Image (tube, rainbow, N blue to C red; front, top):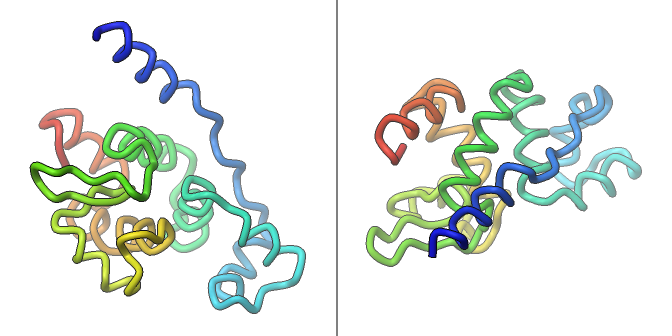
Length: 148
């Protein structure tokens, strides 16, 4: 119903943003990815959800700011609701970034079907930069066409 759609859109628009990464997190990012980070940072890193991981990754590995985060958050909220198990039966798009086909994400890890971090890495390291340059470029395309 229209009422359900409005509630869903409203819920997506008021989601709490992931906290910005602290400088020590970026300095320790590669170690944390390998499971060798400073113990306090590693514990924090291991507890990140898909949104928090994405925010850290775009800030630390791409130096994209809050504007790019806002675009990525809006894009993936619209595409999958940040659900790493989201699957479009008609197109076979899968995961947080709605990769089509989903198996493309295997370049970032064998467990692409169920691992939100693999999906985020593929989206922010490969797909978005290679096709749109930045999350805001992808979001602008999505707004024009309904897909990216």
